[in-house]
Length: 261
Picture 1: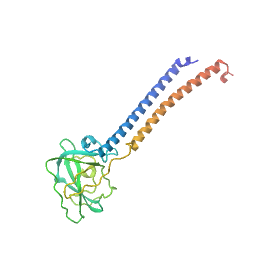
Picture 2: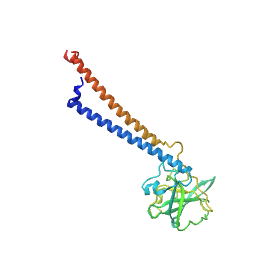
Picture 3: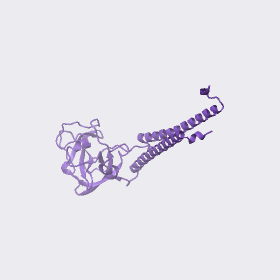
Picture 4: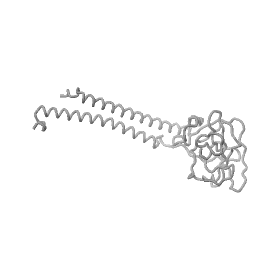
């Protein structure tokens, strides 16, 4: 009854079906791995926010400056070692802390083997028309611990589009820093955990909470289910076609084939 499976037409079709099933299963397994990696990354990020001494080097979080700050890295506790560059220190105006207007104090930290990190050492109160007294940045090599923050945009709260005096920066982003720094910098910025005397630590965006399942992770999980469903559909269609072919051959053997009438 099923000898037709040994014909060249059915052998070819069976090979194609097996290849399709294997590809669907491989893609589904790959998407499942991506889901597990994203969930693990978020859980690690949440753990680092709660456990002391678990900060990761900035270079490992952004992979040497090649990556951008995303939903899985924003708010991460990071450390970065280098030397402050007070010659390119910047004030970021129109920033509110505890209901008072003032400035973020951004001092680039030059690293030995990578891009510079935009370190917001703290916040200082002040109005645009008043002089601001700032504590000097530490000299020599220092290690700064803080929270990694995403780059700002023109729509960010407090961002100033332009028209600022020299030494001020309206928006903290790579697009604005490239115009004022003579060297490359990491994406985003780091809000220092410990502010020196005279400055106040700035509020930061914290890592995502929950069980570590972000929207992107759920998308990977959805793709996983889709590929496994596709594999099941190929199996279902193959068996259905085999059954229909067998029934047609049986009908012909019994003389019930309408084409023979």
